[in-house]
Image 1 (cartoon, helix red, strand yellow):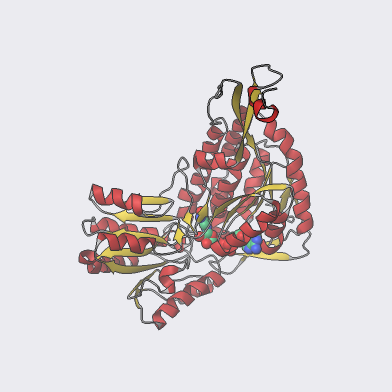
Image 2 (cartoon, helix red, strand yellow):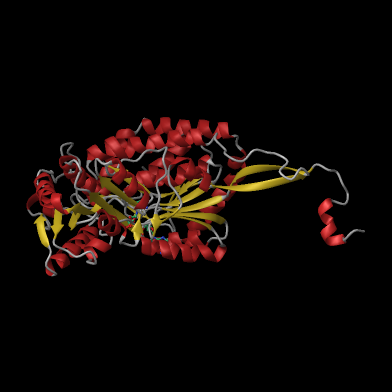
Length: 496
Ligand code: NAD
């Protein structure tokens, strides 16, 4: 990491020109991890110009050359797994076992996946579809991509944006969340170490309103790829419309967890605790609303309460810690506000619902929390609160369970728990979400798409589907008749 200069442009670090600094805070204890300069609109112009200049060469590199560069990137990152894990834990408060076992290896696997995808340009066969022309398809890069990422999985979100874009021959300016920019900057450094040409990957540390909006309105940025909250996503779409940019939106979630009465109760209990508490619940696919068919309801609530009480909240650097702090005091206070208001309108807080005291009081900690006794239209059921909070509600018929699962504006992910094949197929068909797990909740793979339905956005991250989104398809049509006056000219010239 640099001593100063937290803008990575054209292969090197520079100091931002916003004239402001921002302290990256370790949410476990409030200490300063780094004091970063911030980018301003002038830095956006310089970074976009660098990306535009790099596009001509990078887009003409052969798929094999791009794949080789990405394989080198995977190797460069693999040399620094522990550094990535420690820095991610320090800036985001994630437990070290999560960053070591999930965030960093998952990111490197994604890089390797896109090294393969770079050589896999899909399309319809060239042929004479009308007998008069040879049609062929070109799958081309789009140009400069401007990407904006959130703080919950800083490295993974950067990877999900950068890799499909550059594998397809685009160049990119990435703006990570200003509270967690450090591992994205390490990634940019590793791109250079791996031999990816200067200007292909640029990272700007700065505020959403300043750097994000400048990227969204810049005429030389041809595509915007955004991961973040639904309200900001709406603003992104509006601003991108001014220059008709291609838009890719990965937005908020409020994943349902539907337990039918034939489910393996113990598996559902374990899955609900793990699925709701992963990354302290700051996961767009986290289980947030469990709907449990009436015969299992009481046993499920009691089981989840028992398991939740065993979860070890503590120092994220300690390998035995299950749950670290939330990303910031602001986020913790927001989560506490949702639970306090639910308490106010009569909810039962079965477990947790408090800011812990003692040693943990200096960090942004919040206890794992289980809530019952709320109505389907309560804000704690309908809104994304992004914390370690699971709400449980009962249902009677299968129809009701599925209807409740679909009854929020979101549609990112969901799970259904049943041993009945018909019920599982019905749930996978009828739940409106970009991913439906059966008898599990959370696992993702680089090979399969991730993305939302409804207010959770559109466009896919990961997999070949994401690679394809960062390309545009051109139809090339070549006359093979050699005729001066083509047959279709009759419609213009009549029979002359
Ligand atoms: P956020 O929307 O507040 O911010 C996301 C990014 O947008 C940040 O980099 C921020 O600086 C920037 N930004 C803010 N205002 C902007 C503006 N006016 N113009 C341009 N950029 C702006 O989200 P967050 O709090 O950082 O992250 C949490 C959210 O991200 C949750 O809603 C979560 O569900 C979502 N998320 C979704 C996915 C997914 O795949 N669908 C994955 C991870 C996180």
